[in-house]
Image (cartoon, rainbow, N blue to C red; front, side, top):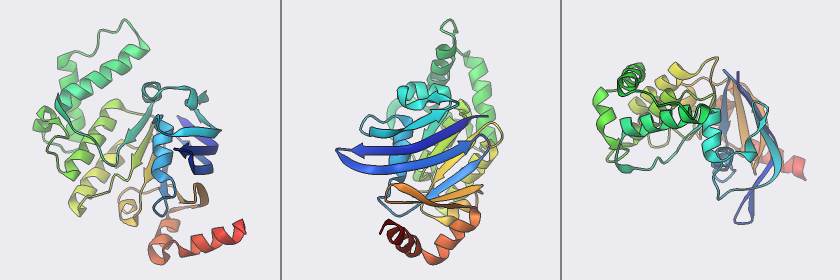
Length: 257
């Protein structure tokens, strides 16, 4: 099982410190949810873990399966088993979903074995159809250009299909519920639930309890001012839904004072 360990992480962007000593531990098979007001650093955490060059790691340590994640490039982090589903996936005109995924699979295989000739077209088609059936997706989806003309729900389903194909050890979902209606939310959540398990841990970043009605977290964390200031079980998300963030703000400011 994979283990992601974040200790005292400080991250800045354009000399503005966003994360201010964040600690987090995720083990394979666990589902963690991070919630918090806008501007607290939730997406900064996701992008920093994946190696976005705009985010400057000022201090702290991140270990992934015992290896120093911060010494790896984004491609190395992906090949090691880390995955990020974007809040706003970009379109790639001219590149079909199938070609994009086959290229990604072959890149991972060749990183493990430079002599690997890559997955055959027949083998890949069989695998892709199995993944799409698991996610209840129309096979015609594979022939469309990646995210071009996709609805919000289709973009998020394409991200989950990437996750299913690459089979990461730890998957980070950055506000995957953003812009989804109830039907699309249920479909995406069903896909995540079908993939999560002993071989894959999940970090869900969200503003809303409604996503957690479908993806049941083992742990819920609240971020405030660049830190995780409260952790608990699913009941913590329900408390936020009922009471908002004022009690967290008051508690945090009292401690800081």
